[in-house]
Amino acid sequence: MYYTTQALMLDSSPQGERGKYMTLLTEARGLVVAQGQGVMPARSKLGGSLTPYRLLSITVATRNIERVIGVEVLETFVQLWRDAKRQGYAAWALSAIAQCVKPGAADQKLFHLTLEYLRIVNNTISSEKLFPLLRLAFAVKFIHLLGYHGSGMTTHPFMEIADQVVRTNALRDALSLLARVQKKVHAQVELILEELSGEKHSMPARFLMSLDTKVA
Picture 1 (cartoon, rainbow, N blue to C red):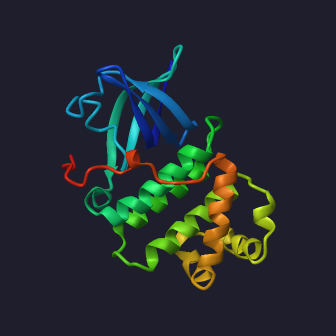
Picture 2: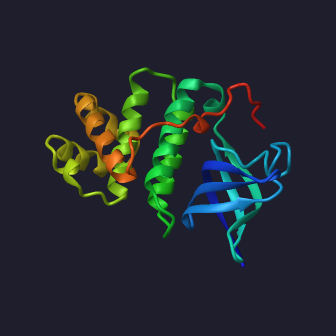
């Protein structure tokens, strides 16, 4: 048995000399941990495509364990490979998802929220003020999709702002709501993500790609 779905890679680790374990956010199955054989080195047919900062179409075999047997690159976020600032904000989101989401049922809203965030960070004109607000907008919507109802969500003024952000149709629509309260919201977001993941949220080095890497 197998299935095909759109996916975003969140994390990976080596498996022997030629394989790796991958954590993927998929449209059809939610968070998926799968094996990839023959994906190392990066020049291999699969390995060159199975990297972060790309929208992928993957085919996964499901017998015994989930294993990626095919991949097609649908979209490459070129600026996330070339610009350290953009890459840092994108990597933060991938790290948050990998730390806080458990494998399970599909969540298409989370998949499309993440895709929207990566596209905006990739395509927008670099701005010292815009990127932090985008990150906060993503984080508030992300926490809402996780169904979090802990004490942090009831802290004024976070709850009121969070409700307004969640009701916006697009991330850009939430920026003006967050501009005046971003410090307070940022503090609440960090506490909530720490509670959800069980550890202080940080951005591990493995989420940052070498900026010298050529984009295929």
